[in-house]
Image (cartoon, rainbow, N blue to C red; front, side):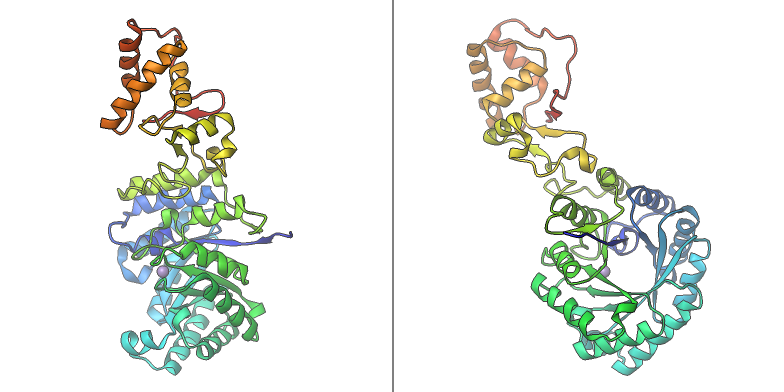
Length: 406
Ligand code: MN
C-alpha cells in the first residue's frame, strides 16, 4: 500500500497546557519545546499570546529557540489577537498563525452572541490580516463537528479564498464517533470547491475516550494533519495522544500507511519530561508510555514472554524509548519467571529448592503486591539454609533484554 505524508501538529504547550494542573513556567515550556523538536514533530503550537504577557513571552522564546519545527501561536479572529501572535512569532525561522472562531449555532448564539454572517466576516478578516504577517495561516472552526454543514462549508471556502493554508476541523467537545468523523471529513472535503488548496486537519478531544480513534478516522477520510499532545493532555479529558496515534501508524502500517518524521525512540523521554515538569503522573496503564505498558505479571504471559516476546508484545519497548520489558514478580507470576530471576540474581537452585522458593514467594505475594530481590534473597536463604548466590554481578536484564521490576 502506498504511504502518504502526515503532518504532526503538537499542541502540548497550548491545549495541553490549558488543562487544570498542567501550566508550565517559561523555562519549562522551553525545555519541553526542545524535547518536541528532538521527537520530530512538524509544528509546535507554543501558546496563546493574547492570553497573558507570560504566554506571549513564552511563545517568543520558543520561536527563538527552535530550529526545525514550525512554531504556531493561537489567536481569536480579532485584530489585536492576530497582531499579538505575530509579535510573539517574529523570531521564528518558520511561523504559523492559528486563528479560530466557533461555527456551531450553539457557540455562536450562546457564547459569542454573534450571527453566522458576522462570524464569517470576522474569520475572513482575521485570515487576511494573518496572511499579512506570514504565508502559513491555519484556520480552525471551533465546534466544527456540531456546526451546520452548509454554513461550515461556506466558512471553509471563504477562508481558503482569503489565504488559509490549513483548515482544522475540531471535535471540540469529544462528542463524535469514528464513523461520523469519517463521513464528516469525506463530505466536507468533497463539497468545498477549493478544498485542494488547503491541508485538512483533525483535532479531537477524549471526552468519550475516542480521540485517537476519531483522529485516525479523520486521517482515513483525507485529513493530512493531526493535532495531538504528549500523554494526551488537554482540556477536560484531553486531546488525542501523540504517542498512540504515532505508534498505531507504525505498528499497523498495513492498515494505517501514513508517514511522519517522528523519532519514536523519543516518545518515552517526552512523556517522562512532561510528567516531571507538570508534576502530573502518567496513568500506569496508559498505552505506549504507562508504567505497565511493557510489564507482565501473569504467569502464563511471563512464560510466553520468556519463550518468545512476540507472544504478548506487539511492539518492542526499545522502539518507544523504554529500556526493557518488565516481568513483575507477584501473586500471578509463574515458576518460569521465578526461576529466571533467581538465575539472574546468581542462584543455582535444584528443582526441589525452586519448588520451595516458588511456594513461599506466592504466599508472600498474597500479602504484598510485588516481590523485590531482597524478598527473594530472604526466601532463598530460608529454603536453602545458606546464601547461595554464586555470581559476582547481579544484573537487572538478561540476554534477551527482559528486566524484572518491582
Ligand atoms: Mn482543543
